[in-house]
Image 1: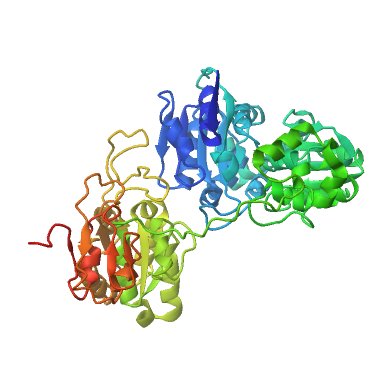
Image 2: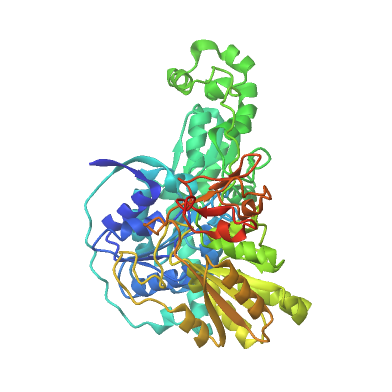
Length: 619
């Protein structure tokens, strides 16, 4: 049976069919749907871990214990998990272990565009790159087999376009894989220096075997066509090459580390001109050039942002069209080249032109771009009032990763830094140590409940231990909101939506040594401001837990607010909140009753009492 699946769901299906028993992750776009899907399979234990490091460690324990295991995370999550990953490359596995790295070219929901193929090379572990959902499923299943065959973790690298695009997938049955025996092997799994030296030799021996495998695996294949032009590519870039340059020969690398050096050399010398098309870094190109092979890559193909068929056509395609326009899809040719080719182009290409609505030979005839729409906090978001207060007090805000990162955008403009998950505390601490106590009284760290449990606790412990006088604000909205309301240890539910022990933030903070702890309502601006003013003057570290559920998980609407036009001064103070429900008609403020969540924060900032609860006009 075939089913239309996004790549993440195909991955979950492939892992399930391969006999997966344990999966762990921390939610992060574009990887989130993997664990959500796996949690629906009763044969699989799936959990949201506090962070990616813990997720990988859970998977390591399961694999050493004999169960096939998987850890999933977005690309920056591998930074968090790098510590156990590098040692795992030494220890190897017992049962198969797959590490999913979901990279994000184009920064659709990320702070950088890092290329995690380099992690595979640094750890000396194989890296698989699928090009559609069927390949995602097939490579996931193969990854477990390779992991056990070569005694290694295997990285399965997705990108946003693969993770979230649909294509048909052939479904199969689950293969029940017996739990492997656990054997006590300290020389393999306890990385004392003496043991580690021997395991490094094992890593080198394994790398040579993997290089031999790379030459013969069907994951790497040559698709011969016109030999005047050849393209080496991997992942989703393969799809762009096939669409833009249907007439060229292609070497598709499904195993992008280690590389098949002989296969690559034979391909390069088998064509007149060879190009390398890959997203982000010249990972393939640098290694191929190191073999002394004549190839062209990043001189033409951008090193930043997500690629597309049009980009390939405008870069590599423009070079090819100069001498062999028939190898380029007609819809991507300049008008003059297309006229020269005439109607003799491939029928399939002509059909694509007709279906796309783009005039043959005129790639510029595309619809105008949509106007920009900056992301905003939702109506009723409990974070909005907090940042309004922080801006009002003119504080330096060390921020973190979450919906509340939008506190940095207009009109709130109330965040100074945002580096990575959990970094708010360390940055605040560094600012204090660099600039002294007086400056520290103007600095606050801001972090969400999920992010605090992810990697904020260690930063807070550092503040206490090293004598900080800083203040941390924990925005507790009771969920992992940014990635779609996933549960975490502070929600009281597991990934499978079963009840679980609920982490007590106040107790945790106190256990870390913080003596000054306040809990306030996010919607009560006066209480928030009072707490912040008190704690930034405190002579010791303090924590303010600002609590209110995410507006999107509160099912009952409290009723909307409205503006009394005769009372409105037209001052626009309410617009400083940046609420999508608020606008200005040129004379007075207007509240959209459909969008209004009824939080009442705008009423608290209005200096003329012009904002009231809808229905109170006649009261």
